[in-house]
Length: 234
Image 1: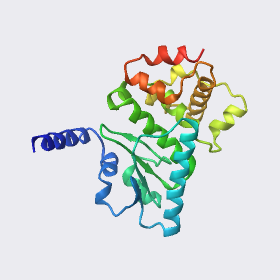
Image 2: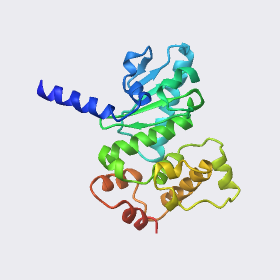
Image 3: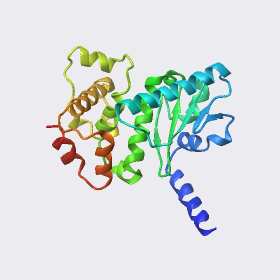
C-alpha cells in the first residue's frame, strides 16, 4: 500500500507541473477513444476502414524507424483524433500535426488530422524512442533541441519548406543557435528544421558514427553529449 500511495503522489505531483492538454493525454482512458492495439487510441468517429489504416500506418512508421535506426523499445501512447475540434483538448494553442509529451513513466503522442500519416507518426515515435532511451532526467538536460528534431527529421519524408530550403541551398542557421526549445521554435522554424536535418544527416554519414541507439546509451551512462557527438562527426 505504501508503495502504491507513494507512486500515486509522484504521478499527481508530476502532473501538477503540466497543463490540461498533457493531463488529457495521460487520462485518455476517461475519454471515448478506443484502444485498437496496444498503446494506440483512436477516435471512435473514425470508420472501421480508417481505424485499420491508422493501425497500418503506425506499423509502417515503426518499420521505417527500425530499418533506419534499429528495433524500437519504447511503448508510447498514441492518440489519433478525427478532427481539429476533437484534437484540441490534447494540444496547447494552435494544433501541431503531432506532439510528444515526455513524462517520467512514459511518452504520450497526440496526433491531429494533419499528422495522420506515416511521416508524422515516424517523426513523433523517434522523439519517444529518444526520450525513452535517454531516461527522463537525462532527457531534461541533454541533448539539445537541434539533435532531438534532427534525428526525427531523418525518417520524416514530408515535402516541406525545410526540404525546399535544403534543396535550394539556403544559408542555414548554426545549430549552436538552436539549443533550447524556445530558440528552435523562434524565427523561421523551417530553416531551423532544415539546419537540424542537415547536421544530423552529416553526422550519420560520418565514418565514426556508432549508431543512434548506442550513442543514446552512452549519454544515458554519463558521457558528455558534445564531446561524444563531435568526436564521432569527424
